[in-house]
Image (cartoon, rainbow, N blue to C red; front, side):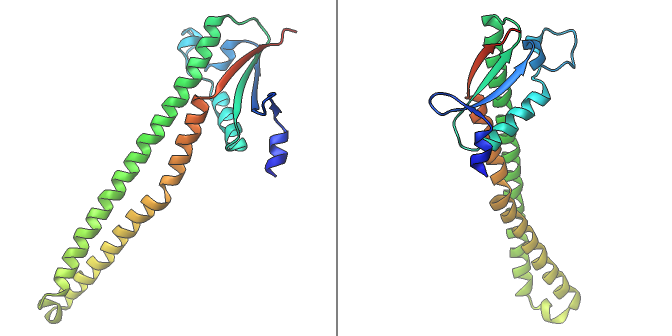
Length: 188
């Protein structure tokens, strides 16, 4: 299946996959939300961003370049701005995912500490003489044991399972931010 996917893309002479983006003019690459700002101050068009992400995901670890094809002449300032925009935008996404991963890891550590503290309290209560004399005390001690295990499990699940998607996105955004970008003019 992967070979079939890769065959859909054009390749450079040295085997790099070309992610092709065609548009009439440079301004089409940017969001139309702020109609008064010059295109160089706007965010990248969300459809463009999703297309680049989907394409880079689809080709996985293969080397790629991004080729912008325009129907009108583009000056060097505009092409430099496009390169800068793509780099800055995907670097921003990379940093954003990194912050989310750090927050998730903080949550995991907090849950682990809470679980250890609750497990310690539960163990202390289980050794108490009151455990045999009071059913309420025994129920609370057992409830704390369950709460400790839930907290510890959530901590480990968060750490062991949920960090992988963050790491994959960070690496993907880094690859896109550092991708070679070329330009082509196809005047009709």
